[in-house]
Amino acid sequence: MGRLLASADQYGRGGEVSSRDSEPLVAVAGLSKRFPIAAGLFRKPTSFIHAVDDVSFRLGRGESLGLVGESGCGKTTVGKLLVKLLDPTEGSVTYRFPAPAVGGHLAGSVEASNIRGRQLRVFRRQVQMIFQDPYESMNPRRTVYDTIAEPLVVQGVGDALGRLERVSEILNLVGLTPAGAFLFRRPHELSGGQRQRVAIARALVIGPSFVVADEPTSMLDVSSRTGIMSLMQELADRLGIAYLYITHDLAVARYMCHRIAVMYLGKIVEMAETEELLRNPLHPYTRALLSAVPSPDPMRRRAPPDILGDLSLPVDPPERCRFYDRCPMATDRCQKAHHPPMEERGPDHWVACYEA
Image (cartoon, rainbow, N blue to C red; front, side):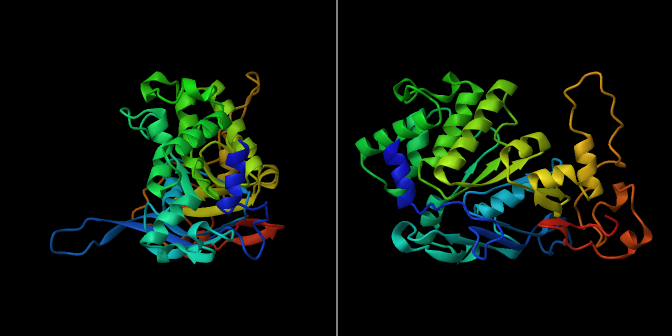
C-alpha cells in the first residue's frame, strides 16, 4: 500500500484546496451538449435534444461535488463530457493538473478540447470514470487481474511482475482480500459489491487526480452500498482524489459530498455546500426533491412533493425557466423572461430562480 500511495505523488496528486481558490482542479464554464434529431440524408437537423445547457462549476483538489437530479436531466452527459467520452457543443472544461504531471505534457492549466494525440493518453492517467452498472462495465471473459491491469498496460506502466504487484495492492486497498483469491476470478464469480470494488480499483490503479462516479451504488443492495460509499470516502481522504459524484439520491449525496449541485432538464438550478443546501433549499425543485426523500419513521405522514406534472422532453425547450411548467411558484415573469441566471443568495449558495 505504501508504494501505491507513493505513486499518487508521482502522478501529481496534491492536498485539498477549496473550490473557491483561483486555480481549481476542474473549471467548467458554459458547458452545453445538444444532440441533433429529425435530420435527413440531404438536410441539416432542425431540432436538438438539449442534454446539457450552460452548466458552470468549479471543483478543488480533494473535493467532492454531488450532481443530483431526476433520470434524464443530463447528469451522466456532464460526466461523459468531463472525461472526454463526448465533445461539448459549446463551453469549456479546464483542468489544472498538479505539477509535474505524467510525462510533463499536461502540467498547469489545460483546456480539454485542446487535448489530442499523445496528450490524450496522459489525460487518461489524471481523469477516470466509474460507471453505473458493474454488470455491464466489465468484460465477462476477462479475469479481475486483466480488467484492473488494462490501464497499466495501455499506459505502459511497469513490467508484468510490477503490474501484478500493483494490482494486488489496489485490490487490498479496495477491500478485496486476500488479493490472490480474487486475481483470476471472472465477473460471474463475484457479487455485485465485489464487482463494483473491482470497477473502483480499475479507475484508481493508474493514480488519477479526478474521478467521475456515475451512480456507483445504484445497482447494489443496501449492505453493499454502504460499504462502497465508505470505501470511496476513505480513498478520497487518503489519496486526495476529487470526485464528481452523480446520483439521484440526496441521502447518498449528503454522505459523500462537500457540495451539491441540483440539475433539472440540462441546467443547474441550485448549488451550495451540502448542509447549507439541505437546511435551506431555495429553489422549488430542490424542495420537491427533499420532500420526496423517504422517512425512516414508518408512522410519519408526509405531504406529497409540491411539484406538478412530469419531466418535460428536452427537445428545443423554450427560453423561459425550464421548471416553469411544474413550478408551484411560477409567475408571469417566469413565463416571459429568459431562464434565470445563477445568483448568489448566500455565502457560496447559488440559485437560478426569480421567485426564490
